[in-house]
Image (cartoon, rainbow, N blue to C red):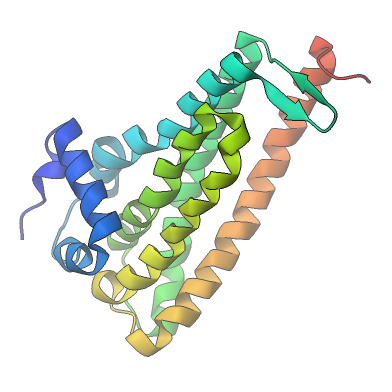
Length: 209
């Protein structure tokens, strides 16, 4: 099967694929299973535009409304907000590749196939919900709504069988183990980023030493 137009055209194609993955995941995964798009094509044509939603929304929201820090509200400098946006973006891209690698390596242990390109497509399209939920960063007070992005885990579960051939009776266990990997990797990356940004905040006088 030929690659979908969503990977060959701009805006409209991305919206079409994102909407289908969110609203009709079972039907869309059946289509994805027959595609052969390589990781870089999926990254550039689909993932990156969606990954950018969160960092850009948070940048704008932070500059407009500031952030609540327990008993006070602080408004970060534009330079600091840009740094946060860039690091968040880079973190998301790294996480995408790491999860895809883990998904490919774990798949054979659950009866599926080891196929990094297919695993990358599975993870990238599964993450659609999480990336779209980043829009709530526009209003920091609504940040809790980003939890709607957890729907991505369900999307991954639905796609594991058609895309990587993981038997349905093992798809839940496969998804759970992959989610554990996601959490561990995310915490490691978040710790590194927090350390760097924390140092910047102290150096700039945004927080007391």
